[in-house]
Amino acid sequence: MAHFHVFDDVHHMVENIKVRHITTNDVFDALRQGFEDFKEKPSHLVFAAMIYPIVGFILFKWAFEQEYLQLIYPLVTGFALVGPFAAIGLYEISRRREQNLDTSWIHALTVWRSPAMPAIMFVGALLVGLFVAWMFTAQLLYIKLYSPMPPEALLPFLYDVLTTSKGWTLIIVGNAVGFLFALAALVVSVVSLPLLLDQDVGAYFAIKTSVAAFFVNPVQVLLWGFIVAAGLLLGFVPLMIGLALVLPILAHSTWHFYRKVVDTSK
Image (cartoon, rainbow, N blue to C red; front, side, top):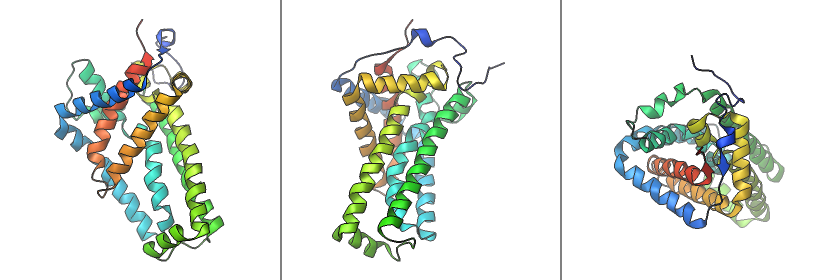
């Protein structure tokens, strides 16, 4: 019977795991490898990833119907905070392909049977917590600069944001605070979720390894974070449909990035 846990390294794998120094060429090579993986079964992966633009559409519909127009931009940028957790099923496809196992899209769903799932859920909960905190912070900033009342219409609100001093304050301060949230999410998750899926070392050590990866390779990890954020932004542009294409490529690439950064050999 599987031993379900959150923090413990029940298989005693920690001593075999090391963080490597990588180069910027490794970052782009991970992206190239991710694209090569995607080309093998693109239709399967797009089908598996369709849930993400659907969820995104529901969130946007909610923002419009509930008159939270001021939260549309935080919703778009905040998706990057939970993206690593949302792509966990696609990491499993990469893991199985690496081991020459069946890579049918159904395995993106059956990953939830993994014995590491409690630890994965813990990391995911941290990312969701960061997302919620970011949304609350964005709302408080809007209230501070404007009012508790939501904008009456989207286009006049955008005009005000782009042409007034308080609007530019919202842009500059909002993006600066958002960057801090994004940095926290990146440091916590850059390799922790793939590591848990691969080695099941417990949430504490997975997060510790992810933090170490950032401090060993700060430029490369920040570059990777920028690539992921830019990819997600491009995926949102065509009515979020692009996420079904972008997410599988980024998920595959994230797996290869993890492989380059973390040495799990004995």
